[in-house]
Length: 191
Image (cartoon, rainbow, N blue to C red):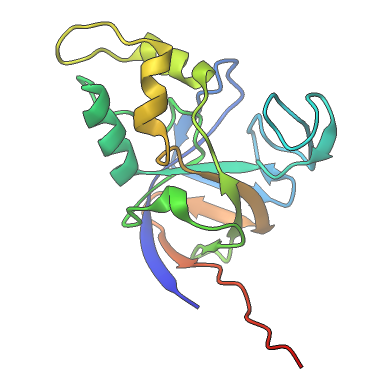
């Protein structure tokens, strides 16, 4: 099993209507999700483009979301932002560094923290136009040209981070080292 190491740069939770989060020193993760977060729960409604028709109640595979500083830096540069893009603006609960291709972590990958808390990656978190509108409303470009919601889509493609579920409850704090156990499917030999 391939293992990577990273560090928690920031953690966030909240229930803002624009899906942004508040920066915190630590977050508590439980089997239902992150305490005090809008995405907490065992179930959620399917949204447009989901695997089930919009509004269908399904298992909440989006209890947490995470991004990396490396990918945020690339997005910020490609959008020519005058200030670095922040994880809390994007509604991420976790921002890590040291895992450059964080968005490419496969389903089943486990992120393990010093408290014993463990998160499972369920899927890549694709960029959406609604989040692009948030970025355009909150950020300016170095050139002074206004941003549009659509401009966000191309730089964020493949760099928007991942979402997943809580596997083991615990505390995640700024500065925590993360052990990333990258999922690799078992190769079963035929009889």
